[in-house]
Every structure is written in structure tokens, then in C-alpha cells.
Image (cartoon, rainbow, N blue to C red; front, side, top):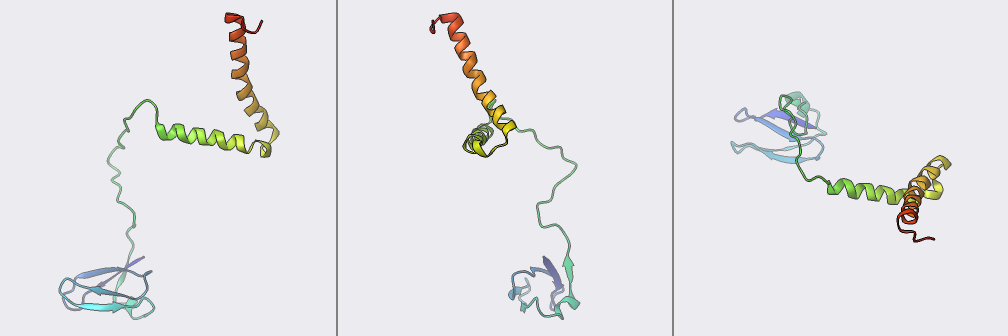
Length: 124
């Protein structure tokens, strides 16, 4: 949280953090002082800065669409790691999830066997 006091010499606003403990601040006019957040007289002279600390977002602007390649590399890597995590924790999953994972693994294998048998007759 930030706090604002006026410089005793020139009257400029001095803004400083309160969560850093005792700090030394200096105004542009050359006046310097040590600020102690535990000193209650400090709060009588100033005011709290209630503005948000994050970046200022202009709500009038429309978000920019991200243009990129057809395949998002980060999304693909994230999906692969998610599948890996699912397979590593297979025995801890509920039965319904286990059956679904087995279906997605066995279905392509069965389709491949059927295609090989019908078109190439490799298994006969």
C-alpha cells in the first residue's frame, strides 16, 4: 500500500510504500527525511493512495486478436503433459474415468487392426 504526504519545503506530493519498513525518501527540491510506518503522526499529515497497483486497462479498446500458426505449440505441449499425467495416475482414477481412458486408447488400435485386415489381409 502506498501513502502520500506533501513535502514541507516545496509542497510536492511524495508517494512511498508503507510495507517496506523504515525508508529514506528525498524530494526533487533536495529535502530528505526518514519515514517510519509505525509513527502515528505520519498518518495525520498525509493520505492513502487508493489507485490500483496493476497496469491501467483502457476499456474502450477492443482486444487484439492473436494471429499465429495453425498449431499453437504451447497448447499442444500442455495437452501432451495432461495426457501423460492422466496415464501416470491411472490407478488413482475413478472407474468411470478409467473406462473412458481405455476406450480412447483401445478404439484407435481396434480401427487399425480392422483396416489392416480388410485392405491388406496381413492378419490372415
